[in-house]
Length: 154
Image (cartoon, rainbow, N blue to C red; front, side, top):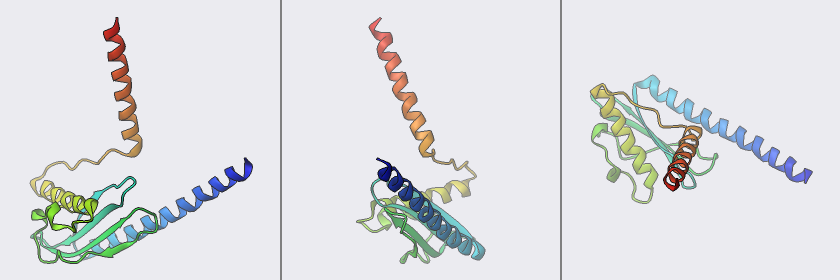
């Protein structure tokens, strides 16, 4: 039993190190884009599928100058250039503009366009719930249904 616990601990530590390296890579790429101008950011988590984060460096008119993507299932994924978006207005991008076989990348592109439109309209851009918040909301929902079901019995 002890070897299993030690192995799990080592895997946990290695995953944390690789995760922090991935976040450092994303952060460095974002900072490099931000130093050149404004950046529209879109994301879509993947769960067990490849998640995606897109960054569009835009000019003052919202025209894409440079695009980058972080897409993958594992912590080994790195930021790469995303071709085909230069010269396009970021607010007009849709899911159909992304590659067909990359569903979450298409949704991340749409999220970047939506975020840009909200920002230019002066709307509040809300943060998505964290995994802990989603778990808490799910537990609250289960508890509420349980109480309602028991209240109907009596």
